[in-house]
Length: 213
Image (cartoon, rainbow, N blue to C red; front, side):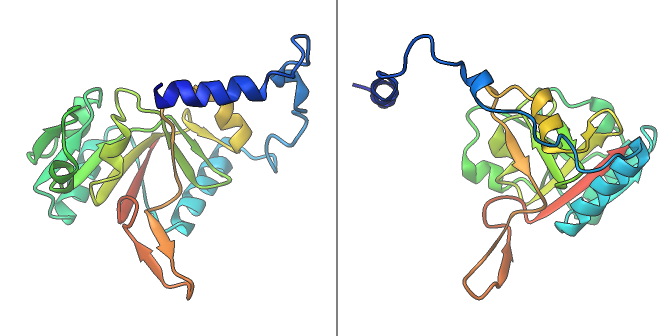
């Protein structure tokens, strides 16, 4: 028996006494909670996202689409990156202004190989203003989850305002729960019992977010 069969067997046994005509889950849980906590203009929502990203110690940049290649090139140069990991579906124009060696997102890349990469550039699926959270869903311009967890420097591009929502309920409506969702609120960080903060333990030590208008 596989682990999958064992888990599904437990679920089946747990549901054995549930009537077939029981209220469906989608209807059993009330959905009358607040969808957002204030009425904001588009500009105010984007400003709130930038504020909360910075509060989580992400480094926020804002630019136009025409400026994006030079901004990314500048961030990689400032980091002295010699290599950058690139998802297969990333817009090639985003890296047009840099000659840094590209590393492809390959299924057989080992953790040690990924650890030797200096930076990774991705897009995102959605950004949540009220929580300062970026959500990646493994799309072609985001790549596999591990490419944003192992390299120490992550540049994430957010298209404004199309990818920005106010609150979590609005984000969930846009996301497919069957996809590998990664929720990012600032660079990786943890604290011990004395609240000494350590960054880079479970993911990138540095997160730079580019809001592209």
